[in-house]
Image (cartoon, rainbow, N blue to C red; front, side, top):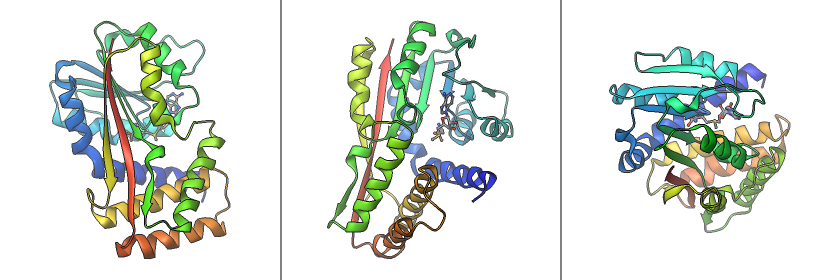
Length: 260
Ligand SMILES: C[S@@+](CC[C@H](N)C(=O)[O-])C[C@H]1O[C@@H](n2cnc3c(N)ncnc32)[C@H](O)[C@@H]1O
């Protein structure tokens, strides 16, 4: 897979994530102060699909998506509207002068637990944001993977995730660490929810496709070859056993809201 093919693949995966979870995530945001904000920043917005949907459904709120990758911002630019803009910003850039103080809401969806220094990001936002501000962190909780009955190829899938996390220096149990981190940094009114992500809650075909794409992304991004035999075994397990409905696969999303 060339890098442009990988980009297209990641883009379609992000779109599937929005299709599967938009309403659950929106419901969480709305129950935690979303509509009281007037300027919301989506940090690590990817291709902008999620923030664009928010902007479409909430014309009274101004949105901005930032991401360090030029390709993401180019994709986002296609979705620009009156209440939505995008900029290329690297949250770890040393001499960034980016003005975070104009926002009163900060969304980090599949971002904070994908970077190798979550505390640095939260320190920066704490330092540069105005008061009051709201923060929403939505991510996969990798510690909550399960398969019933157990299957050896599912264990390979969890190992693949761990390999990927090691490669990008991220703690695979990151979801469990986010609350202590927010407490340590003195964020207030911290609320946590877990959304089970399984065939009980989403369409079996969407779940199987989602898992398939996760495996392909993680396999490529952790440096495995295109024809890696273990990846092929995991994909076969998804296509045959998971799709048959005989194995109960469950993921979990962690949703955290906090204030400063
Ligand atoms: C998994 S994607 C999440 C996309 C989007 N938030 C969503 O919900 O679909 C993570 C994004 O974080 C971006 N990212 C990673 N490190 C970053 C940094 N230091 N500054 C800004 N963006 C970053 C990546 O380029 C990627 O697009």
